Every structure is written in structure tokens, then in C-alpha cells.
Length: 405
Image (cartoon, rainbow, N blue to C red):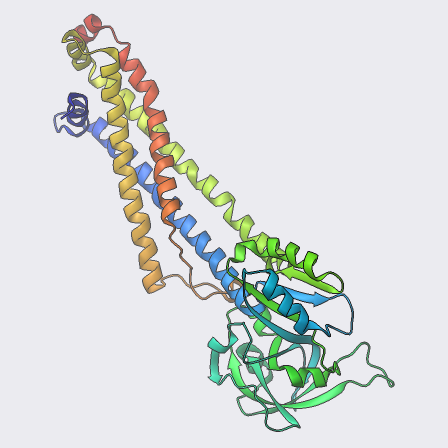
């Protein structure tokens, strides 16, 4: 065994040393462990929150939406979709849709909604997997009554159940005696809930043909939904689409459509690691004080080691080992606590969240690279903290050190 490491371990864990120094050592270890654990838990929660928001929004609106600058919508959208598939290999799924404002009426209430007409065979949203009651069935056999899916919260608000018939007024411009809203009857076949309350309360789904008839669009659609292999490249793919399609197509990524939501997530995520890193920095000051006290306590031992021929570098290495042992022990304990609590929350969901967070429990995403980064930062700070006490120990005069009592 390296004699420097052997002596460092004896200094640090010897039961014959000062009880006060031992207590400060344990405080230093606890400080590092607390900082590391807090940082891991916070990063895991923030990463999980960002992932959940992205998945929920992407499942609701797709990675990219291609709209139109004109009010009449998109006519030759089949050609546009074919060209995009040929020119952009990153595209995984595409589907045309119709989405416009409408008014939903029940016998007792009236509510403004967004009605979205989709093709059930090619639809890329996750709504079909979020049905709470009824079924994902939008195939209409009756030409007069179409089928519709409604958000659970909106259904509760309006007193709607599966099987009920409702009326939807399609709005084309400003209603007037010369511009009557188009009225169509629908039957509710399912209630869904995605977890994004603000959207579940507004968006209702029907088949694309019924939506085209409701808004008198003919064969036109209002947009095309696109999913790609890597959601992080959505903005880059949008720029490529603009060059390929030109006017009147207007592609937008979900990061642009919901800029406020993602900006809020980033604002929540950015400062937390910086603030919590201060806990580790404070813990490193504890390491400095611990090593300084140890240097004073082991002054005679330092003098004896120097008289036996141990160099200044050797003395310095002994106390660097001491600080690194404190940092390593604290870091390993902190990682164990942080990962342990994170896994427990993932398994049992101890902490519940209110509705405006778009999820019912605290989300956790454990990133191994971030764990390694936290460990490296912790050990680096601990190493820096050992330099000053170790240097002071190496500069001691061996004669005065031996005489020190």
C-alpha cells in the first residue's frame, strides 16, 4: 500500500485522535453528501419535468405543424407530404388535420372549443392511448351524426357522458345574418385525458371529413402534423421545410408554438443546479477547516515524518489524500442517497402535484452522465479545498514541529 495513503487513513479514521476533529470530519462528509444528494435529486426532477412536458405536448400537437398563410387552408397537401417524405429522411410519421374554433352546445350550457378533425388511421397524437371512458372511435356510419372525443374535465364541466348527443357550431369569420354558423350533431364516443389540463378542456376530436363539412373547407385541410426521429432537431427540420415548401406553407416546431411553456421549464431548470452547487462549495470550506485542525493536531507527527526523510511533496500528498477521502466518502454517500430517494419516488410516487403542473406526481429522470458530472465536480472542489492546508503542512519546520506540544 502507498505509505502516504496508509498514513492519511490512520490520521482520518484513528480512534485515538481528537474527538472534536473527528466530529468536524463527519460534518464535512455529511456536508458533501447533502450537497451531492440535493443536486442529484434536483437535476433528476428537473430533467423528468422537462421530459414529461415535451412528451405530453408532442403527443398532443406533434413535433412540427405545417399551417397555411391563407384562410382557405391547404389544397395540394398530398403532394407536399410526398415531397417531404422524399427529401427529409428524419420524418417518421405525417398526418393531415383540420382545426378551427367552434362552439359546443348541450341542453344546458354553451362552451367555446377547438375542434380537431383527424384521420384515425394516420393520426400521430397519443390521444388514442389516453381514453378514460368509451373508445377511440371516430368512424361515422351515419351521415347526419358524426362521432366525437371530449376531454374528461370538459365533459364533467358540461355534464356530458359517453353516448350523449351534442351540437357543434362551426364558426367561419364573424357570425352575422349573412354568415350563419354551420351546425352539426355529434355523438360522444369517448372521454380522454392527456394530463395537459389547458388543452384537454378545449380540444375535441372528430374525423377529418366531418370537420371539413362543418367548416365548409371542401377537400382542404388547415395543417399537416409531422413527427421526426429526434425532437431536439425540430427547429432545424422546420428551416429545411421552409426551403422545400415555400409559400403558402408555414411550418412551426412545438418549441415555437409553445414557447412560453418551454421557456418557463428552462427558467425553472437553469438556476437550481447553480444554487444547490453552493451547498457543495460550503462543504469544501468545512474540509479546509477540518484539514487545518488536523494539521495542528498532527504537528509533531509531521515533524517526525520530515525527520525520517519524507519530502514536502510527501507531506502535502498525505493531507491531500485526507481531503480526497472525505470528499470521496461524502460523494459516494450523497450519490447513494440521491439515487435511492429518486428510485423510491419513481416507484411509489410519494409527492403529488396540483393540476397546473400538467402531471399528477413528481417526475424523475435519472441521467447517468449527469451523475458522473456531479461526482466529478464534487471531487474537483474537494481537491481544490485540500491544497491550502496541505501546502501549509508541507512548509512546517521539522525541528519546531517536534518540539510542539
